[in-house]
Image (cartoon, rainbow, N blue to C red; front, side, top):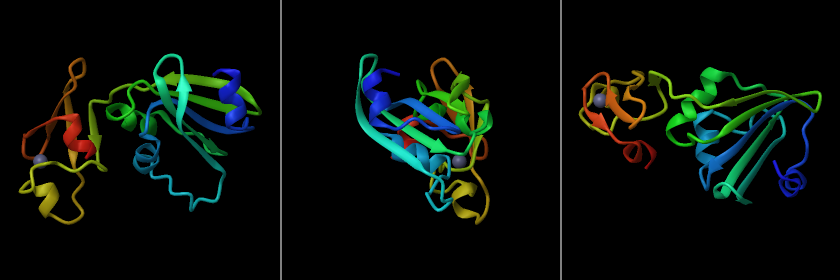
Length: 153
Ligand SMILES: [Zn+2]
């Protein structure tokens, strides 16, 4: 992270920094991670930060929470280039990229309105990633092909 960006969002002692999020998707990222702010810990969100690699990027710092791989991999569809930095005692102890999981359970809705996951209360969607390279998705219940754009809107 450049010096400018470090100044923009304060250094954290313990927690998770999600960097290189496609702008302006940081709020969507918080949503998917189920981070509401009700938890009481300090959360810093920076939108449209100038970045060399992406022109603009979003950054999220979640203090006193170490996000696990299975949580952050859910971000694969909306922030595939994001990096996850785990900070312990001001030191970067783990840096990882997001990996597309085989399937994503819950959060996203199947775009097929007649799909059982939309009509049956309490049934989580199960979206299978059938081609990781070209990002081809399919609902495991109704077998409909799904595009990433359909999931995000
Ligand atoms: Zn479906």
